[in-house]
Length: 114
Length: 113
Image (cartoon, rainbow over all chains, first blue to last red):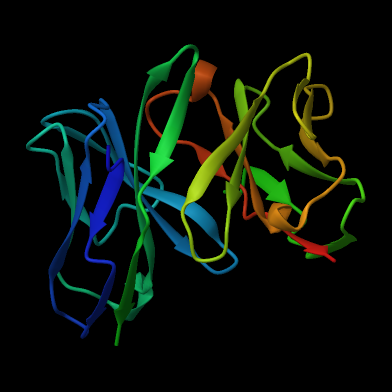
């Protein structure tokens, strides 16, 4: 199993450009998440999905959109990138194991917006 | 809103020593508690869940104090490989729930030879 993979690993965008980050998991997990991590801020939840075809807003959803057309994939879109979106983006997936929803994270995407 | 507070450190500790750090949470309705570990420029990984009665996993011991709303992590006989950032994580749902977790900013631990 590859676990959770993210594409791309690095990206530089200019202000106003758009892009899509792809997250894929091969563990058949129901739940998937997008977080961003900034220095001194910790991990913050952007959007999440509790199943194929469903998405919900997290703590910092503005400026992002998501889609979960297939159970194994969760896409994060930036329609018009801003320098404030420079961050490391982590995707995660989880399922109930025993009594715990352990989250498995991807390796991250480092995005710089100039 | 900052529901989970941690001392960012760094904690500089000699190899073999015991180190402990705490985390406080503001939501008294929190039900689930975890410690995740994050190595430099890597993704977070679950270290251990924190049970109400406290729990131990090898050299690691986690404690929960609901009355004072804090959890702690104690590492005994520290190894160089324990150097990492330790993230305190809470959830208002049993088991962590399906709609995401609240992460602290992390405590940076450096084990020195």
